[in-house]
Length: 126
Image 1 (cartoon, rainbow, N blue to C red):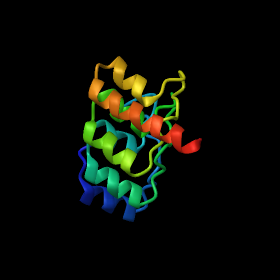
Image 2: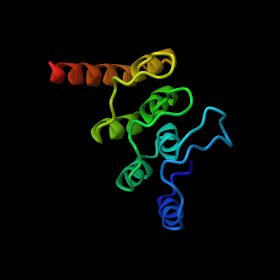
Image 3: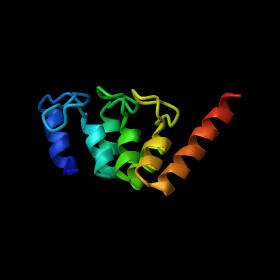
Image 4: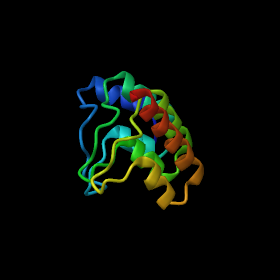
């Protein structure tokens, strides 16, 4: 949560699993990458991805790190996740895309960026 990359690297070196689901602070569960996205910790996002964190892994409610960045208005985190290949077309457990989650929380600038990214991805498939 603090984004301390030195502490993260040390924990991983000591055997922490990069994709462990933490349910201590949130019953829906969050992985380190979800927390980094929520708190807009771009260096932590980059470190976790470099160490093998699954970019689109979901918690118990289907929220990916991109959903958490969208929900909390973490603009830099959303941009970093998209740049690293996060899929803006993955729905959560309620069928909502990250852009919809951002809109619901009045994070309209992020919603626009996520919508554009989803449209680019859809265009690339065609």
